[in-house]
Length: 452
Ligand SMILES: [Zn+2]
Image 1: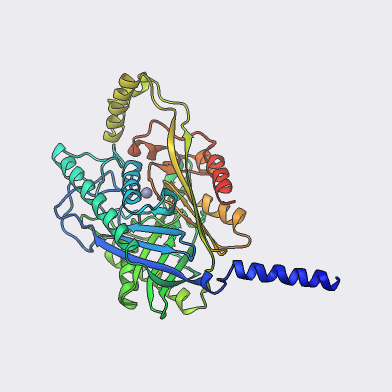
Image 2: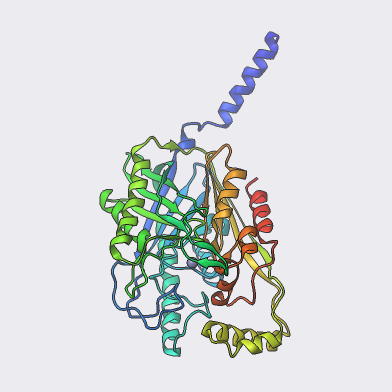
């Protein structure tokens, strides 16, 4: 290399250094948090279990909506919302996103709306529509609450965005082992029962947001397991509610925020007591604390996000004759679904052959973390596959139950095996039949496209 060439290379480096003055500030973000109690003021129907037969009776814990807003040194933002809810439908999340965009300018792809999937939260309008045997009076309460909740969620997001201060981000990974696969093979097919040999994802990804002086502002963590330890009639965040409570007790001034991973086919087992629920909450909080005690890796660079909604086709649609027969089924949810779908056929001439709005969001936290957010109740195979295909050089976090919970989302394996997650759960979500077998490839290929 000649002298002139060296000078020219040096000059090039100098120009790059001038254009990019901010190697140091690349690790500096702004962050703001806000939270609000969303526990219903009146007794009302609880979500998650179709077998519930009466409204709530008091509370064990408050339910919350929480928002974390972060902004990189170039002004690129992300708002994460976590909530003690079983699921939010698209109508709700798109309405929240539209209001937020109107008030703050935040684009849709930079808003990530999630739920913990606690089964001790309230029913929302438009979610699991055919699951509940409720009176018109109970539905009126659901309507009122859903509108109130929307206002609370928007206010919480706006509030987090309007209180941003200098912050640093770091991440790590822990482990918690209470999630057990719940698809048990039997001679009659797949039973909804404990299968300790089945696949699970025991990772506990964690994100720490701390102020410039090193005070933790937010602890964000995920776990892939149903929040179904409890099935009583009190409001409660289940194990995730306790994990967040314990972390906030131990780290005063910090907002602990839980999101649910691909745990559609995992339950906390054994279950059904407050003691077990607290035990799992403690185990999860300890896993996050373990990450905090170890060396966490800093996040540097821009926050990027993309969001898409893709159509997911259904399998062969039921005939009018089949739906008419379903009107006399012994399962109330089957009867309610048939009545609703027959009305749809009358009105539109046919049933939709696809769900048109399946949401897929990908976020990059600097050059470090790829964060994938999928709608619906996603089974663990997606987590295992996407981590393998996209996680060789960086951590991949996969949040499920994100932006819209319209149904279960089986992998091709689960679809072939059948059972609740592949098939019968569609009844409670009010969808006409199971998905087409192309579901896994459609979702995974879109994730690949968006994460490029
Ligand atoms: Zn579920």
